[in-house]
Amino acid sequence: MSDIAPIRFRSATEETPLARWALIGIAFAGLAVLVFAPLIAVFAEALVQGAWAAVKSLGNRDALSAIKLTLIITAIAVPLNAAFGIAAAWFITKFDFRGKAFLITLIDLPFSVSPVVAGLCIVLMFGSNSLLGGWLVAQGYHIVFALPGIVLATMFVTFPFVARELIPVMIEQGRAEEEAALTLGASGWRTFWTVTIPNIRWALLYGVLLCNARAMGEFGAVAVVSGKIRGQTATMPITIEMLYNEYLSVAAFSMAAVLALLALVTLLLKTLLEIRHADQLSAQRRH
Amino acid sequence: MHIQIDEISKQFGTTAALTPVSLSIPSGALVALLGPSGSGKTTLLRILGGLEFPSSGRVRFDGQDATNLTVQQRRAGFVFQSYALFRHMTVFDNIAYGLTARPRASRPQKAEIARRVTKLLELIQLPDIGGRFPSQLSGGQRQRVALARALAIEPRMLLLDEPFGALDAKVRKELRQGLRDIHDETGLTTIFVTHDQDEAMELADLVVVMSMGRIEQIGKPADIRARPATAFVREFIGA
Image (cartoon, rainbow over all chains, first blue to last red; front, top):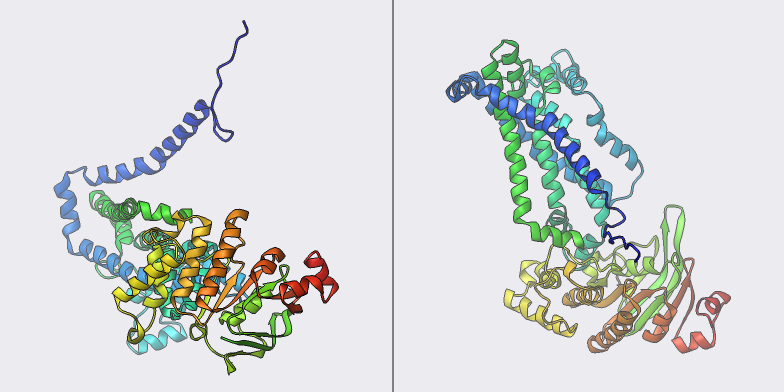
């Protein structure tokens, strides 16, 4: 009687169980060390003197002003960047023109330029020593060391997020659906709202969330243009740094925990939306 | 509707997609634009639909100059090669799109739109699929929905870009008859683009053979088969 080896059912692309568990293990270990541990440390450090001390540190005027400032900046920068991002992605994917590659490179510029350099550029352009900045200051408009400068710096740094998410999606979808809407008598505007936007809404949401997270957390560029005036132009990340340098560790980590929490909330929102629209998502992706 | 194409040419950058071509399409005809890829047949169809504008020449609908009409003003029912159904809308909403997109003054009532969509779903013999999404349909069903969507706007002509290109052989045969039936029922001037000479010969009243941006021959299928005008036509139809 010959031995018949049991038949193993494994597809060609499947790894052995050992390799699989090793890979999953490495992924989890990496996440634990690089993401979860620091996050937990932030919250633990904030609560080291109890929840009351943490809350109290957030209740003073400067801390509240920092939180308010960061929310205002985000509320201005993110919608504007979403609009610019849609416009840029639309222009790049729906039209053929000379210099397209150059424009795409230009959109990526904020990713490759250091935020500090970006901040310095804004100071050079709009500072009171420059021609434009001097004139604006004479008219009573302060850009540098004021809200407009911080918004400009934040927008520069977060500019690519929405456009970068949208461009590949819009290239893949092509122009046929828009053309179909036009042949059916829809105006360009109607086509945009009833065909283009629904087709890109998930990519748009994802781009906006990334943009939002980065806008709240931006440090380098804002540090240069804000002047770090406590209670006026100090955003949350800047306040955290100042508090930490003054050895006010509970206050610094409490603020950091709030900033981390804001980011976690946006991620949670995205996940909830995805779960809620799971059917629709999969139905569209199969098309 | 009678369609007259006078000396239409189209340049894309430095390449000529269409050298001046002229063509007269009688009202109610079922016409095939037949040719290999790069012959300019799709460009010509898109010019008729208002999706491209010619570099020179004129298009006339029933004798009226239509060259400068916008894509919306053309009222051409256009069926795209990959159907271009709106993936985020149900079949019902896809077909209703052209009616709901009308300006308020000429937009039918909701009930009237529903009635027309139901009628179109019956016409394409898929009465029960109104609630489904395009991704839940077979290729043949998608093609028929695209046809119904194009018919919903009460078009003045029907333009189809490779309408059977993405289908398997059996479904293709069935849908050829379906298109013929719909053409006969609506009486619409219908122009379709194809690279399949069998399809053109079997379905069309009039076949326009194209190559390299030129019209090689215009004629009834039997005439083209019997008397190919050029060496290209003879070779292409395999006569």
